[in-house]
Image (cartoon, rainbow, N blue to C red; front, side, top):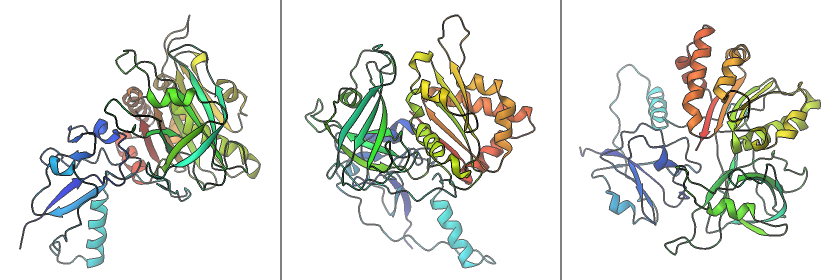
Length: 401
């Protein structure tokens, strides 16, 4: 019998070239050119780190083949090659065939993040760069000061008669106009939806985005973010090309009594604004559990939605703010604030109805995990075991960038 190998590939028909997979891979097994993204067979160890962050699922593709495809071949593809039939797995004596089949399917899905069990069913990938949806700007509101390094805008986009159903926690792709330095159309940029499923303005087909104008890169060097500056400069009546929606796991639960523990920095607040507003609008139904939000920024004036957050009723949400550059006060980050409120955090962690969401700058992720571990140790919990269980149950979700 011919020996086949299982190769991890990227579907070029689904991939939106957002570079999330390459940035996420801890082994540098993913590369790209101006055309496609490819996986290096001899480097990839199947760790699955790239699977859950991918907004479209393009990264979750495999083939059982005799000879692995090289990077050069993958970069030339317009679509994945046809699947080859994998050999039948060896039978395990005494184990029912149905159990063996389900076990094999579970093994193939390792790395995928489940949504909460009670989340609504999401629609994904209805519009592509080749066939985008056209939205019209009906509002562009500055949320923060005019400081060049921290301009954040709240945009409202009207879809008219275009069917574009979204859920809290999903993202949309924005196609910036014009060409890049290589004369090619700009890649799609992803933005979390900041409005609930019934829209920024209820009973109208619209959605909102939270956008920070990018003026420096991660190293602090001057740059001009193509999509962010395009969006922040839009006027009422301007048109935007959208793709998506994207995201099938970073969704909010819908069952009565479900609790949300949310941790974010900056524009990472967008999905939590959507979730919180969803709960606020349905307060009279008494169907939702407690909300606890840890929100970090350098200064209060740089915190998007600062005023509205403080006006939310305490019966709906407990808001804990952390500022790292506030004059006259020691630096405090979200993980520090979590430690200050360790009893509250532990109470949420012990509740089987709690879902945890982390969204914002990549740098905060390690500190937040360390805080969770410390809080668990102080309250008789094992964070490593708890995190594994929460992930398996669709109760722990991370979107950092």
